[in-house]
Length: 135
Image 1 (spheres, rainbow, N blue to C red):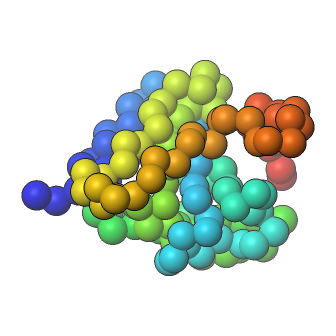
Image 2: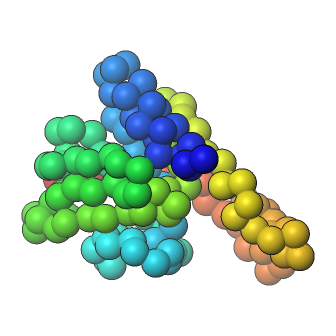
């Protein structure tokens, strides 16, 4: 069967937009095929506003999210493979979904990886995610 991730992504995008909210995606910018301006990447991740008013030529197909957007006043083409989208949520409420891993994405011999929200061994405090509007 085909992946269910792009279908979930499109459904949640539509739900968020239909409710007058601003859809954002959390992207693992270190995965192959991700094309985003490097200055937007923090700790290997980037949050992208994919609202109609923020992007041009938005495509949400089964392989990738593609659009053109302005970063620091400069237009950039953006490509995010669906496998690199970690979550989609509404900026205003935080409601959305962390996209599930694909079935069979790991082999049975792989050791489990702790989730990203587990503290590091250095006991450094972690800040929660936040967004900033840049015009």
